[in-house]
Each structure stands twice: as C-alpha cells, then as structure tokens.
Picture 1 (cartoon, helix red, strand yellow):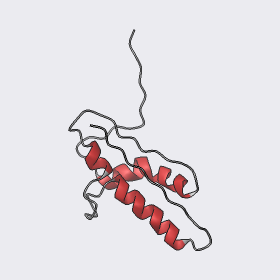
Picture 2: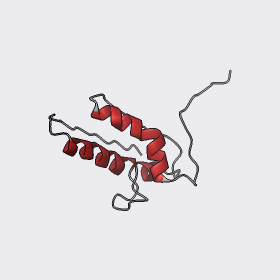
Picture 3: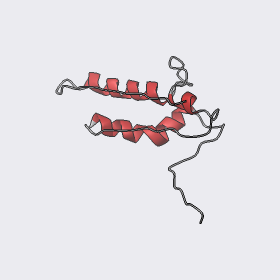
Length: 96
C-alpha cells in the first residue's frame, strides 16, 4: 500500500536565502515574538543544503540563513519594545 506524505514547501537550487526565510520562517519568528514556541525543521538527503539553509554565511547579507535572520528579527523587535521584558531561549540540533 503506498504511503502519502504532505509537506509545506520544496526549494530548488535557484532559491535565495531571503525568500526561503520570508516564505517559511518569518511567520514562525513573528509568533515566537508573541510568546509562542516555534520550530523550524529541515529534513532531507545528505548534501542537499539543509545546513546552508539554516546557517548560511552569517555575516553575508545575501547568504545568511534562517537562524541569523531569525536572531536579527527577534532582537530587533526586543530592542524596539521597552515596555516588555523578554527571555530568549534557543536550541539547535544537527544530527549526522
């Protein structure tokens, strides 16, 4: 019997880091700022770009990945909101 799987999106080699962040992670980051837990999970075959998509080149504005973009977004919001106190916890796990 065939198994059916669903997924949110698939990106090819033409995808740009900013677009991937905007389409997949931005809403999660915005909800995290509102106090919800968020998870971004990259899954796939070895060598397909998961680590690059998540980390990228952190100091390169074009090549930085989801994590550096999420950190910038979260801490930018925190810095602009002086009426609240925030506690930020992050965990990152990479399984080989």
